[in-house]
Length: 407
Image (cartoon, rainbow, N blue to C red; front, top):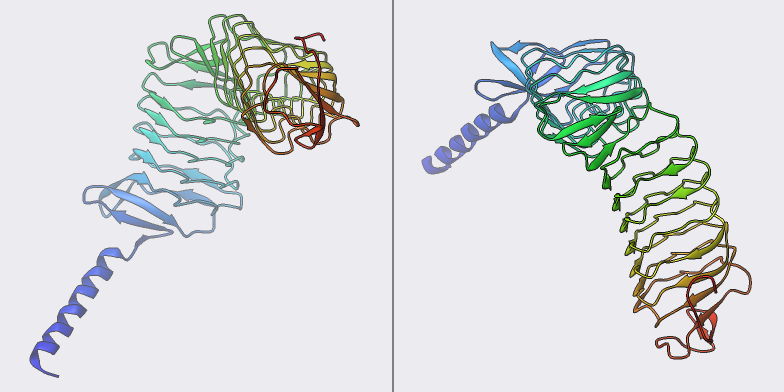
């Protein structure tokens, strides 16, 4: 081996040793960490639970961050958690699914960011949850399914960004209170709203009984009432509401009686009422609605009577009325409908015929009318186009003089 080869080999060895020293995990007790120069980030927990105390400092430098996934799914035995006062940020999924934690969770002053799913599934924490002043961001599903927290939750004036479903399924939370000088959010009767009160963001999962939506609300936010099972009575929305967001009332099985939708409503989002099997009586969809989203009324099996799609609707999403077995008689499809996606009326076993007031939809999904009533057939007008005879979409199809609702 010549001197050049020896020199090259030595260089490779030195570089490898430097790289190893840079990237190998530093360890302090049960914690692996990264030295950022002036602060420390906890990157992994290797312990077995018990009394978990995250140190204030390591090598004389403050522990400022709990890194993403550092404790994820690692605490399965009864344990307590103490966070350091030096902490600034808790990363995404930092304590995800650590259901072994018990006792209170104290979030120290000085925290600014709580990442997405940071404490999701930590169902063993108990007592009140306090979010300190200084917190600006709480990520998506940050405290999802933390069912042990109780009482009202106060959100600080500094909070600017709150992710979707941040407190979903926190079944012990009885209400939200927002500091009055918060620039982004407000609260009324324990409900969390946008600052101007037009968007209802979240209903506290531990608040049951009858539901009263405040006047001035125009939008029911996505997952605002997701699986809030403590409701009773009718659901009445005030005039002025124009949009019901995705999965807004999904799984709210406690409602009974009729569903009253306001005349101002234009949009019913995906899965808006999926699984709300307690509704009974007829379903009246307002004339202003233009789109009925994917799975909007899926498995709302308590509705009865005829189903009439209002004249302004242009699109019916996949599975929109899937499993709505209580509807009977004719299904009237207005002439403006251009899209009916797959399985839209799958399992509507009481519907005996579909009456199209206009031409065949240009975008027609598969299995739209599967498991409707025995002998189901399709009717279209004398001048309608796009249909085939004697069958269309696998069902008997014939021309007749057709009229609007109530035919």
